[in-house]
Image (tube, rainbow, N blue to C red; front, top):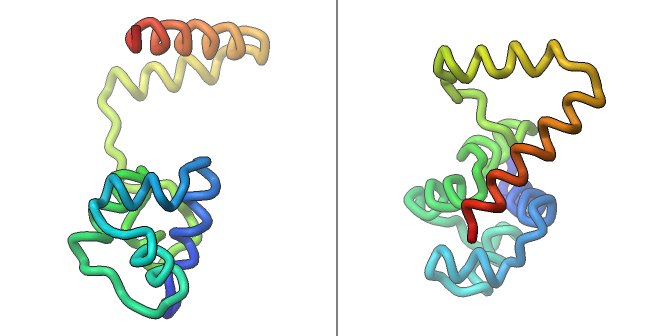
Length: 111
């Protein structure tokens, strides 16, 4: 396990999120997050759990126990598995069309 939380910096950057925005969501200072990343201080477990939820990753990734930022403990419903199965049957053009349709639905929900 790493002595610091370098994966925290990686995932924040990958998600185009600022350390300031993360600090606001966590209700802590940006300085505290910088100290977590550098290994100067260690966050409380409750803070690590909150970070993982906000960043949609696992605590193991934040702690450097895995290099995979995607949690592996996601359990899909039967319907979700069927959607994935059907998606994999599509050709590349159909996948692009479906992705665009889904994004349009999501965008409409934001209005």
